[in-house]
Length: 310
Image (tube, rainbow, N blue to C red; front, side):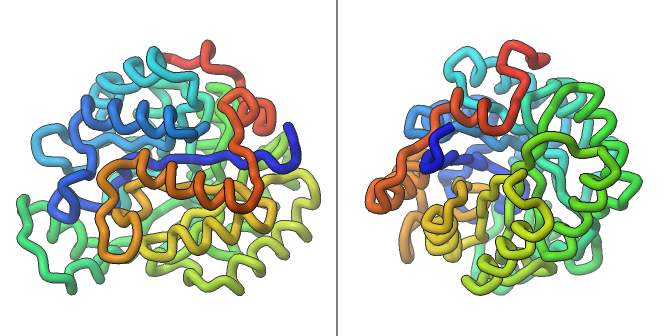
């Protein structure tokens, strides 16, 4: 793959934001499929996917719900499908893994450690909640912990990596997560070229400061040399500044309504595709080309879209 091709990942809906926060957040399988396909048409090579209960928009790990949109996406685009193993911080491990085990995708996300994952500050903003579960979920993150122990990670690598041929988007929310990834690398459990997602701006993880991005890259360079590629996601208003910085530093980028509901100061993004088009404008200004799905597959050593279970 050419050195200056940038892989755009689009995280379409996630489990962080709730329907009351934006009327444009996709909830139903039909909405998720339409948003994912439009994002791919706009230039996203990878689609990072969660599901929601179509009735009220709460996060769902029901494989049957995933199967209502995954085949539609696959038939309409050759973009790489990346299924979350993070689900929601309120889900148990088996629940979180069920969709990926059923779908056997080319890629899965993998959070590299247990951590506080605080969404409750969103309660400080004035909001008319459409569903009772929304403030309840946000408040629960004050008391809860997202759990991915070393044993949990070993099991995910075995079941989805060796067992299903998936490669991983290794989500690193702090410097310690990079060292945990190096531990699994040294044990031979994580072969091949690594795709590391530096995550900034989640309360409980590393802050969204430019110097933290340079520090994360410096440590990753020390630990992994040339055997990795990095991408950046940043929460909320920090999304575009930090992903733009990542592209200028030789990295890849992640956008989407999972990470930010905005498309500029004070403006809600009307679609995931809008955010993909916005980062493409930045990449064009930096004289960087956008990677195709085929180029992303070559870079990351993926098994191919014909080897999935949907």
